[in-house]
Amino acid sequence: MAVETSAGEGLSDPTAGRCRYALVIFDWDGTLMDSAARIVACMQAAARELQWPVPSAAAVRNIIGLGLPEAVAMLFPGIALQDRDRLREAYGHQFRIADRIPTPFFPGVVDGIGRLRDDARCRLAVATGKSRRGLDRVFGHEACGSWFVASRTADLTRSKPHPQMLEELLAECGVSTTQAVMIGDTEYDLEMARSIGMDRVAVTYGVHERERLLRSEPQLVAEDFSSVVDWLLV
Image (cartoon, rainbow, N blue to C red; front, side):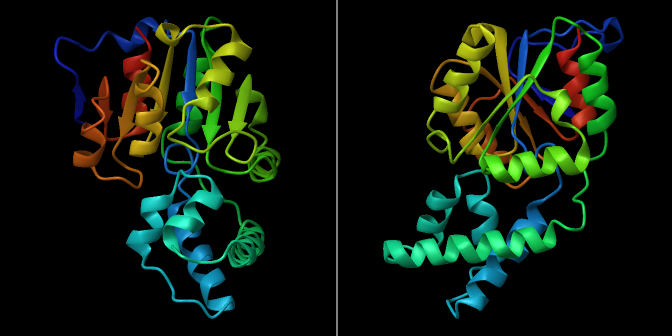
């Protein structure tokens, strides 16, 4: 697959198997898990349940990656705080129902994570707009929590693009910004990393279009997960 790198960077031989970063931080929805369609459907169903105007699929995709309060405020500006709480409750209900059917990982994710974990130097973490309860539920369903040494969720930190998630992960893992990289499919992921001088990788198979991602000047733009892993392993 086509892979773009920033000026002056070249791809190294992926067969060498040595990760170029001590800590690789992943977004979840739209980066590891193919969940955008489910998020759109659940948000639209929640609006119908409350007899609110139903947002378009494009509008919902735009807010994927934000914390739920921030997403609701952007989708429904001017709505009273108590009504936002009703929408969040309705969305959570819809999502728990939908989550009875597992959401798939993107192609290459399971194998790619395995390749990264083969390097004992490389640690993996998650920074997501999901709630802690939601992320833990996925960890349980997919038996994948052991893949990651740490994780942060939007309900226990400030929402992306504020860098609190990354700052806490760096502190917990004892690494500097130059030793870590953020992988994501939205400008919220990339701007979160850029604001603290951290390298960032954009994937184009998620929710934000390539042109929007490029504005955050990522070190790599990749069309599939396997290309990300190939670039990480030097």
